[in-house]
Image (cartoon, rainbow, N blue to C red; front, top):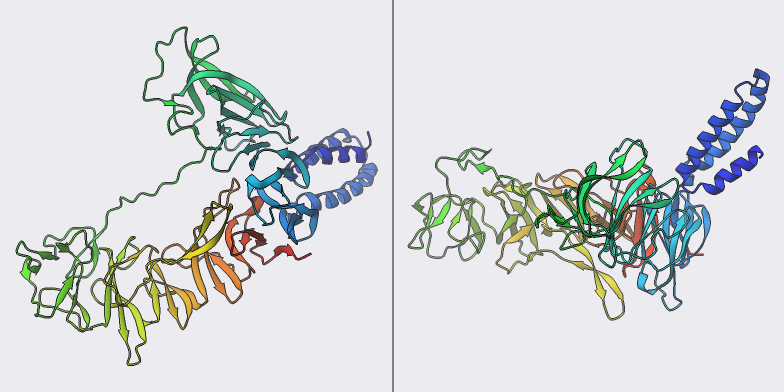
Length: 603
């Protein structure tokens, strides 16, 4: 076989770009080894050829141009490289990434006109590896791609119902769809992942465990269709599993499932064996596929947030924050005869003054300053005899749900004054009545407007809507809740910006609108949905916001449509972010990169 034929063969049988590169490296290594006896003159002759070939071959394999992106032309999608050069003609109603240069495609019925994914109306779905259709005419609407060369097809993206497994040839690996599954990777994270263990729950409630060999692209049963299956160690990311079950002869087994380095695959080893059910798993052990466990398509570590952190106490006299509790705490309290006191001493109230506690569910004690109204304006009681120097036309508590503000005890104040023309200006006071943000803004919001999706069940369609959160009204007597972790939106002259609790500008006050996406888009390709987005004229941009810290990854206003979510470090390209853009009906418009490339043209 000629050298060119070998290269052509390797290109045809290699699907991912990584696989092409590895095969080429092995080819070059073998070629050079068998030609090791060539003399210098011959080496020069062949080295010129090899050098030229390496330049051409590597430019196509290892450059970013080998990374593909869904590209919209008119109302159809194809694929392009990162520069926007189309490499697969637009003939699909929808394409979305699912893994390393792997994509799900859809061809919808003629009656379905809108773009985007509506799987129940799709007449054809499948998977592309690069530009090649691998899975065709599938009944599955959602696909996941694993680096080990395994494609998972499911009925929908949030459940494993009616799932099956495909290899890179597009062959189904299970004879029938299954009810549930879990995928377990090789425990050694530093080694090449060539095998997987897959736990499958069949529709008849029997369980199988398979070893998937990525090179052979085949499933081999480790445990085949057993009953009464139970996991004895619940942590499925351990280096092994201990499980018990009854085989087809009703013999009871307890086995250890683990990756054997010598065998190069997952195997089972008898842990205990009994001909009876004595010693069966106890009732508190987890039964796979029973109760609330056993759901999901892949093993994902849950990220929890510890909300139990202690809140530091404030020294009311010194005004500082300390973790040491003051021996003589200072607070407002209602006595048994309903007298308002401060540290046990009655507060001197005039006949016109009314006071307001910060919360309705705890109206007998408060460590922060106490809001009062004298019949004309609002002020603060700081002690039994001390009032704030400034009075305001409106004053309202801000209950901070997080401690990033300058209020250890989670309370600030929204203050407002009205000029002779009736125009309002707002600012923020600290817990002790001192000005935190000057009264110069037309509006201050302590929770971001949220962009949500409303789904209409009668026609399967929906639209995006903006939900305003805690908009303050002057004539309303209620406490505001702040969820924005030490930052808030301000408006001046119909333009919006973001400040933090130190009165630092995080985002200048120049934008037409600012909000946070709350679109729960479901995808099996890693993506971020909680983007903060702004509108500037007819363009959109997005950014990350983490409490009162400076904003990160500001794209600027470069998008023609709303960015709903992003694929960060797209296709393992560090620093490359691909954004999913949508119109006001939440229908997919196109994809775009953080470099300003819009993967769309009208025709």
